[in-house]
Image (cartoon, rainbow, N blue to C red; front, top):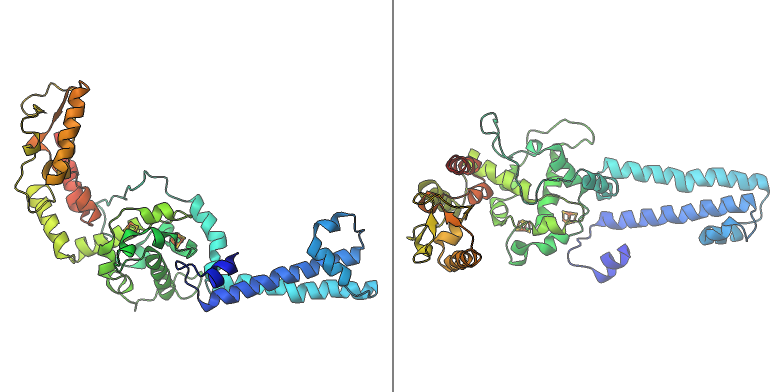
Length: 364
Ligand code: SF4
Ligand code: SF4
């Protein structure tokens, strides 16, 4: 089935390299020689056709065509052929997989990656301890955690993440499968000797050359790639970690992101062009504002987009009418509400995110 999909159907998300053909041929020969060894064993033990041998039809077939040598010769063949045509090639194959770091490593590493998958709520990003850290984000491969590096080696190159990515489909430079594969290739360049933690210092810059800035900024952090990945690889935290490095260590970010962050800093919302206030949408709806009347049961957190973006104001007005019709005693923070900080966080400015977060926590 794998051969059919890769060489006949040629699914676009599968990229086939010469190593794949070598692996297929090698596995085929190991399976074939496995049946031959099994056949020898059946022939030597001379089991009856009605016995368990029938449950190994290919091995049984080999046993039938195994020449009728003396038992001694059969035993010789069984010992030496098994070593020469099956056991030794199988061990060479295993050595090849781990020394060349073939993608077939995923047979072992993918289940491990599933076992160690993140159990955090979906979309939650790891915070940075701004008080103690000396590294903001990830600019070198060794800054990733062991689990993030395991992700790279475990990838099966199945391409499901590529098929799910809206940025890839809209023709952008980002391809989540390629991000993982490029980081994996970089990991192997930096640590060329398997199982030896000796890093090479002369290397390409990870956040501008290995993964370009364009790719890092193309991601919308929608998580469609992670949802599609059968082995729970996390693309978004790696991309956001690289953004954090660009933003917090190098101040390298696109103009649109820069303007949104400036707006967040100055006006506590990301909508640069708007002249609306946080309560314009509520005009005439009779919504309580906490600073004027704190006698409420439920706080309606409106958020920047629903309060300030013209198309979304209808949504907050409609939500208000539903709450009123349901008889819920609620209110809003109005001008005291500030951004929850999520846009800053997803753009890599963890410091601004934590500042906005803290302000909201203190207010509440
Ligand atoms: S999170 Fe980023 S990489 Fe993943 S599917 Fe969305 S846009 Fe693509
Ligand atoms: S879906 Fe997961 S395993 Fe498949 S190519 Fe993407 S990252 Fe690799």
